[in-house]
Image (cartoon, rainbow, N blue to C red):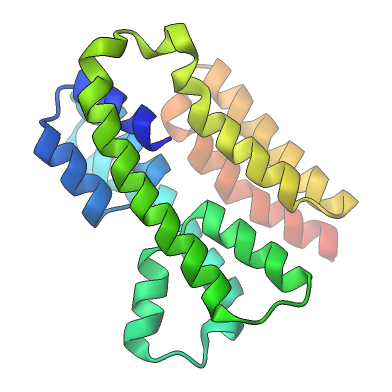
Length: 201
């Protein structure tokens, strides 16, 4: 995904230093892709900021779910843990917790390693951007979708969880096919928790 982002951002007109700085300072894959897509399409700044904000709101839910595991850390350590919180790190930490794991070191090791790899692969994408040409020829544009599908498949354990994932995916897919790809993920992500709460009740 990092390589894909580097390629897409470079071809979208961003300078190498801007691309690398975004991966170092922002570190939010889906939001970075959304930014590049909207920026390349000359979308209004308000739309770009709002979209990135809504995409990142899911991190509040993930952080809340991990709060009990990170409560014994200092404020500075919790802020650092929040900075490296990603969907992949959350999925691994949740799986580890379900197996009875309680050590923060597990989450920290995976999350920091992912951060470092993200930066390295972003640089690789920046360097390879011109050589690759059209990313879709190699299926590179599918990398982010494949990653999230893997997270969902590994995370689903019960029937209601599978139903929530299918509903969210169906909503996002239908909106994307209808031409509303900008709000597809936001809508799917916003409605999925509502479905989950309704099923539990």
